[in-house]
Length: 190
Image 1 (cartoon, rainbow, N blue to C red):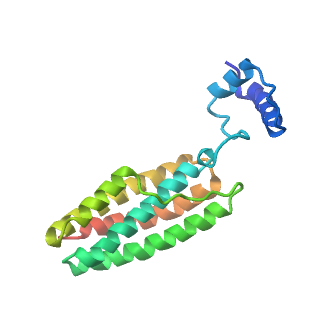
Image 2: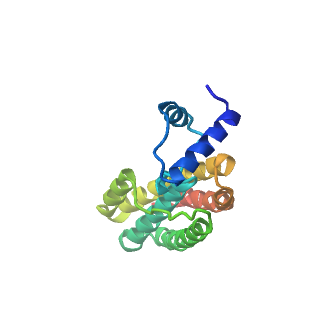
Image 3: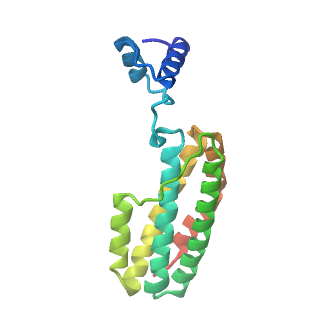
């Protein structure tokens, strides 16, 4: 296997050829580049392959989920404490989304976070919307607790090992905020 040091000139040559529109590559070059997952930024990379894109999408979807479930809580909850928490989550996650978009748009190349909920988030939101009263409140509190714990774990992981410095800073800055949200969710009573 080639070392990273010897692979870089090969990757640079491949990039130069692909940027010029040349199709003259050897099967050996393709195999070497394809087997080395550390070479991710070639000229044919899609936006989804851009460094930090997966993290940006996860953060955007997490914000969208928190906002959507909290909007549901404003109408379906029977608890004034849950409604107060829900409004705080709407405000905080709207601000987080704005900060994420600003950070992502300042990158080179710029990223566009995709806030689409994943299938699990959509299923949880749909199930939550079908509930009312105390049953809604119990489910909302459980989802907020689990969601904030998952987000906290993801933020800590990206802050430690992320591949885009500006997004690492973004993640690091959110850790204390999400920790506070998690602790508040744990303190809610149905």
